[in-house]
Amino acid sequence: MSSQWIIDASSLIILGKLSLIDIVTSLCDSLIIPGGVAGEIMRGPPNDNAKSWLTGKGKKYIKNTGSIDLRIASWGLGVGESEVI
Image (cartoon, rainbow, N blue to C red; front, side, top):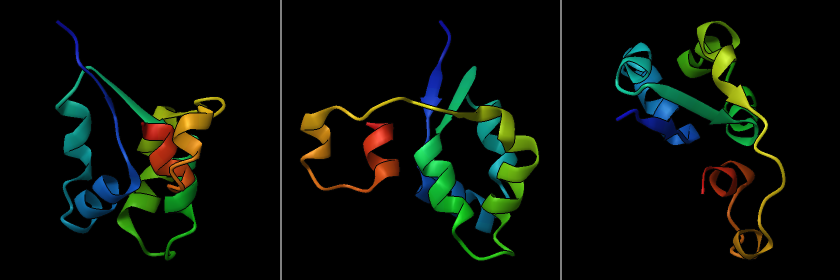
């Protein structure tokens, strides 16, 4: 059975701070980083490890998830969180 993960910004930021961000790709068969999540990370500080990873190795995992379901949008979450859900 294959596993597909959709990951949020907080997880990538914490893994980056721990210098463990590369481990995430070895834990699943397929990784998706929604565009909104990538956008949140890219607005962070210039020296952020997650940001550096996304512009290099992580770039291939960024996917456009399309529109957010109106029911989820009504919850008032951020774009990244809504796209993950």
